[in-house]
Length: 166
Image (cartoon, rainbow, N blue to C red; front, top):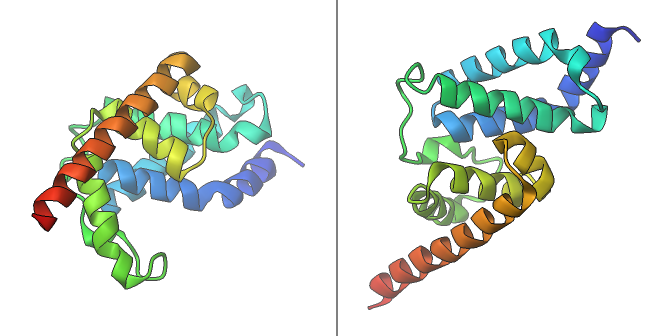
């Protein structure tokens, strides 16, 4: 199998998580598509540098993350407000949309890297060492960020819950 065929095969297996991650970063479908296109281009042109096919998704996420933060101004429609339009009905039961929106609103109150680490670990299932590679740091730092971020998120969620019940 040549480089192009191998890349296409790996991409097909990982395209949906990449699209969801790009959408999570940009909060805008058009910008997410553009970010995916740029990510795919860079991933293909640097595909020879990938050491393990198992790490392909992590490789894509790292490229997407770096592109997003490097070009954040370019994604002019980026907003920190999570829109219900970004959750497709087929993904989630309609009754859970409100809870998901509320969770993302609280996540948006966290520092950008902490939020990203929690999303990568808890939603996409990456291990701490994989997230550390994406963030250019060590696994212990990521572990601490995730732990502190979860504590802060718990605090934010409980504060809101108390306000709505009280």
